[in-house]
Length: 317
Image (cartoon, rainbow, N blue to C red; front, side, top):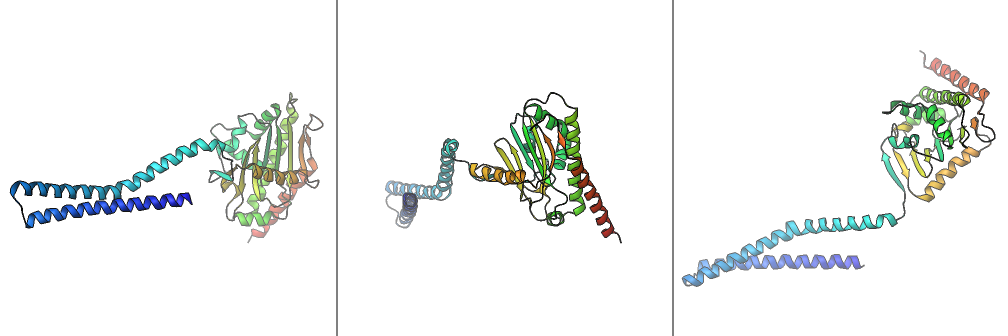
């Protein structure tokens, strides 16, 4: 209510100044006209005419300032004051909602700051998240292998949870269609993630000195992947899946609100703790020897190979 009253008062004052300036200009024109029609004695006429011209100039300049300078000037000053006030208050305001980091998640640097900074807990989840991470790390300015980076984090004592989609999930074909890609492409990406899993396991088997409490869990899920999830301690980045866009081609959003962070974490914790969720790689819980489900890995890759052959047969003329 006070704000409305202030704006109303400000508008009235501006209108009043405009009318006064218009009156002064009109008065000056009138004086000059009268002097021109009925000129008085020489000295008095020059003085009166000068007063009239001065009134015209004053009125016109006042009108010009009111119309073209005062408004924008007031807006600029107001914006500057508002900016300074917000800057002072920003540290005390609660974080809310999301902040878009990039219009595409593919190759986004903020996704990989964890490779060069300390972390206590990392969680990565997506349809074929390991395939995407490996591709991005290879294409970076300082190329890395995902196996090397993960082993390095385990040496630091970091806990890492990775989840991607099981190729046997009956949603694969539907997801591929909605993303505007071939089912074959999506299956090949998941297959590449499975290959990377075995490479990580083999690398862990050759490592020594991983006794700092580091843990690694790689599991697969069969549920609808509502969004990709990337957590580096308290920093949470999500990416939603949209129709006709591959997952890595959608915006990356940093979660700011604490309540929202908890909701996203709970979603994946339920998937992670689900007893039906296949466990592919486990390291650090009860033994410093990595555990790998060879049969599950072989079954998944064999299923993908059979499905790819089936799709190739369907596509053949």
